Image (tube, rainbow, N blue to C red; front, side, top):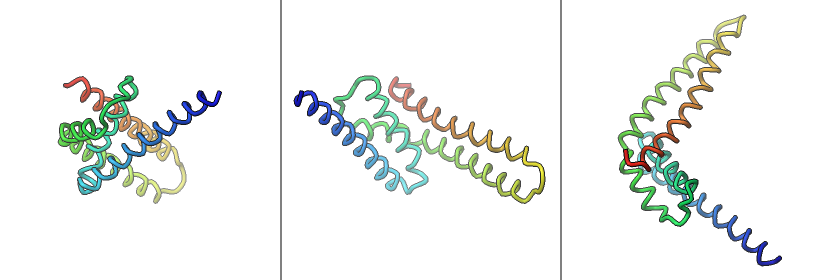
Length: 137
């Protein structure tokens, strides 16, 4: 009984350590990319590492996988980042403009729906870009 419990605790701690390491890598590479230019490539690299874990490749060397994905997807990630930054800036402007209106808030609901769809698309793009990176396209 004690062996089963200690094995479960060990596996849990191992996953927490892996996730913490990937998050530290993400933070460091985001800062190294001067924030704006490192955020998307670091996020794509983080998704590439976690995608390998989900596919059952748990005994990978995390830093080389992260670094290779970061280098390979730097331009693609920054282009996506600029597109998403412009999109979210436009949503911010929409909220500011709609905030000045009085009365009907139906327009606000459409903007909220658009924002929700944009955020959902962002996460889906992360997933797709990590999948494309793993497949080698």
